[in-house]
Amino acid sequence: MTRPLSELRGPVRALFSDVDGTMTTGDRIEASTYAALERLGEAGVPVVMVTGRPAGFGYAFMKMTPVLAMVCENGGVTFVREGKKLTKIYGVPPASLPEWRRRMNDAAVDVCSKVPGARLSSDSKYREVDLAIDWNEECTLSKDDANICVRMLSKAGFLASRSSVHINFGPPHFDKLSACLTVVRQVLGADGNDLSQYLYVGDALNDAPMFNGFPKSVGVANIKQWWDELAFKPAFLTERPEGAGLREVIAHLMTTRV
Image 1 (cartoon, rainbow, N blue to C red):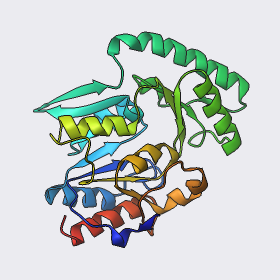
Image 2 (image 1 turned 90 degrees about the vertical axis):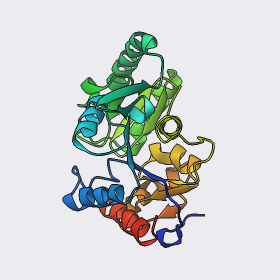
Image 3 (image 1 turned 180 degrees about the vertical axis):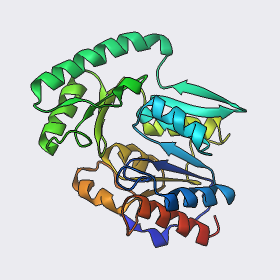
Image 4 (image 1 turned 180 degrees about the horizontal axis):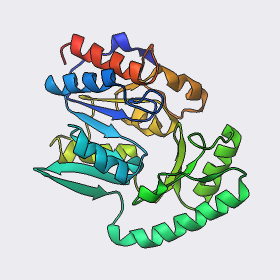
């Protein structure tokens, strides 16, 4: 049963957060949200960004922000820091990517030819492992048409999931959760079998594996628009949506002396 955020208790060793619709408000990260993330980091709780956005997006964020790691493409590419260098961890063997990309491009052509209005997301050109169909960012598809896209891509052998803006699809060998477990093991040096000291915050259908995997998971209030479709619900829920909801989470963590 999902409970109010006020019932969440520590300790929390690191915050894993989705980006679109969780960290952002509209299309941007507000100054107040960025400041809250800075305060949390200064308090000793590192932040890991977790998104369906492309590797190119992740590289820029790793260069411009103090986040500990960046999971991109729903787990297809993860950036971690090694001194001044950024290292990429792929969700599939790099040698297999050319064949996967060929298959994904063929599948995208098929979907876009059969579902009116569907097209590749404008950020697909910056992706290394997965691709994305735009359903709710620059395009506007109905939920029914978006679900048709998901079913077609799944039938073609891909792992397909719908975020608040895109339908990400790629090799069926990774997801947000598997990549976060890699961060816990390789970056935080902890046991990936115990996520009880970590918190995940999200807002969309592709966050369901995280809500299932993290005992301490939070949905920002705007997740209620997808509530009946969620395979797994978050353990806690904020009162406010989007970036304001994430700030609510951070304020609660700071108050409870994480």
